[in-house]
Image (cartoon, rainbow, N blue to C red):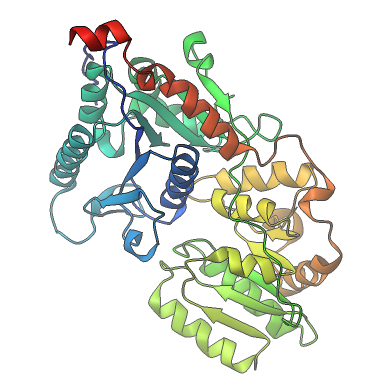
Length: 414
């Protein structure tokens, strides 16, 4: 892919209420959409006259409630195949036609919405470069500050380097982006440390801290204890659920009970198989398909068993729950890197298959130990959960010159 040259930006523009555009390609899972939704809610709360529009490819976007002054545009869906390629989710069109169609929708939405701030999640040029036309338009207008938002861990440096070279990511950052916000702490992990960053890109990096989720709630006093088991979106969570069920099947005295939230993307046949096993456990394990307010479930849990994606990790920190993270290592090392760094800081316990084994008693012992495991707050890091406050202040600074009222003399001469 060759990136076109951008037109120079101008500095004109009248005072307007902040308009915030958030883009996430969302081919699979819930992470990008949930992160964008959390940031949008924080920004419209901080700027009372602001509005936010999320452009998302998530097939489950309609199952979420969006806050007042936040809405979304659902892009036609694409899915990632086992070999890493993409295909249309429903339309049956070639991927080139799909991304061209999505690019037109994205550009039209950006042109109509006229954002003051655009926050792009993870992919600097979007899926197959679909965000480039919108980037060109916004940069040429001079009325939009453009930010790239990255989670705390992307992948191992040896995998990330060729991927970013192929996508011309650094070229895009230098050409189109004012800042790069990293939703984590430098003390935990530096996602771009393995890349040879130009000095001007390095100067644009801003570490925000992790994004706090929800308001910690008090669990009902008479609620029976449970361990929350969450594989995130569930599309690749079958192994974690199987391991958890095996632990309860193998160890009849294992307590407390487990509450599994499958996630909307768990394979249907796998779900049916798990349901049969759960019925045989006679109430020691319960399961549900999806819950739009996971905060309520975290509040009542004594601990969490998870794969350790970014959003789940933020929830574990936010609700200060002891946790066991059994990370995946394919197709990315992201979860394993995050879990290892968090374990080293005393924020969680990681189950590493090579180090700890994969037997059911390994998981059973880890679940049983949750009741005595220290919570993350026992090992505090400064600004660990300051991400949303930082995002608000960074957004305020980025938009400052665009939101200033026109000088009085200019208003009179107009």
